[in-house]
Image 1 (cartoon, rainbow, N blue to C red):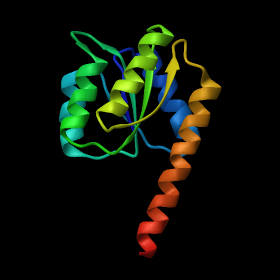
Image 2 (image 1 turned 180 degrees about the vertical axis):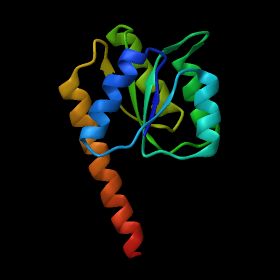
Image 3 (image 1 turned 30 degrees about the vertical axis):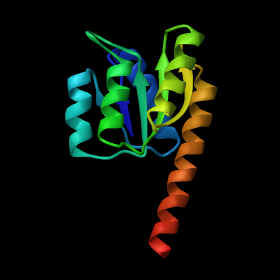
Image 4 (image 1 turned 120 degrees about the vertical axis):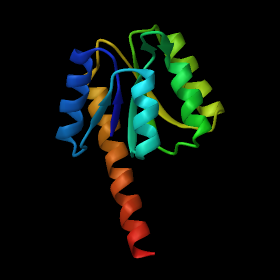
Length: 132
């Protein structure tokens, strides 16, 4: 799992929740870090903050679309609900698997439930491909 988040406190919270549901996570603190890591590896899940210093989540969504990323994406942001909703819709319009958004302060239950569902889908998908 890749956590794209510039605030260490939020990154740590997401990482702890992810570990509890079985994900091993890597972190990217900037747009540039995210692009570098995404060029090296694929991830079952990505959490994406919408504000990353000079860049915004839209820059990352465009990059993910350009590399044809198939990861499940969870938008995690302090932006208002309408902005988050718009980013989810835009991501889907870019043919990305934007799963849901979680507002900051992080709703731990919502994030855990989303990560559990994504983790289960990932395990089932891998089992299916191993049997094929």
